[in-house]
Length: 256
Image 1 (cartoon, rainbow, N blue to C red):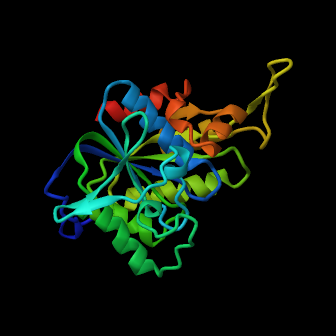
Image 2 (tube, rainbow, N blue to C red; image 1 turned 90 degrees about the vertical axis):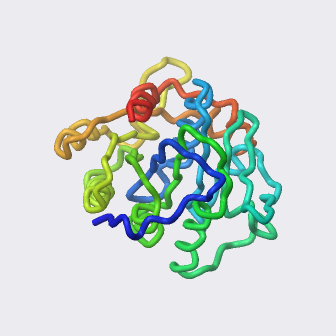
């Protein structure tokens, strides 16, 4: 169970209204792309948004926004980088000597860095801070749940055979930590044929609606595979991506 005594103190120069976790039970479901898409959508609506990249060993957010410089700091703390569309970003890649160096740290060190991204980073005034969590239910998600004031989480998944078990694990971890699950977002839901417009279920037919019903939560979006979106991420042009499939997710977040 989450315990207030474990909560880390926010940097004194930060003022954050809402903290939202974006989680997944396994890797490879495009969680970072969903996090960035949510951030873009919120920023486009005029909200002040930040992304805390808690995927310490596999950070991808800075590259998606073409951010390669080191984070600056002074006696007050560390300053996040700013994306082309005004999103504040903090990630391991911004503090490594070389962004392509592997992070070969043990669990407690990684968990400590995540806490530092909360206690030492000067986020300024934000309406929403999105936490891009690493996959699974290990040390770092546990640290985030226990140390940061998470108001709710969005679970990202894909339409594969193991989805029921994987989503259920992520859902139950949030429940154990007394964190509300705002809903589920299915990524790579289908592929639209460029010639005939037919929807192709590349990973098989989705069962996410029935899974959400069993868990007592809601499906907040089904995002298709899109080569142009993937290209934007690879080329560092993700600041220009606005998804039309996340309207319900944005409503769920902004209702908090």
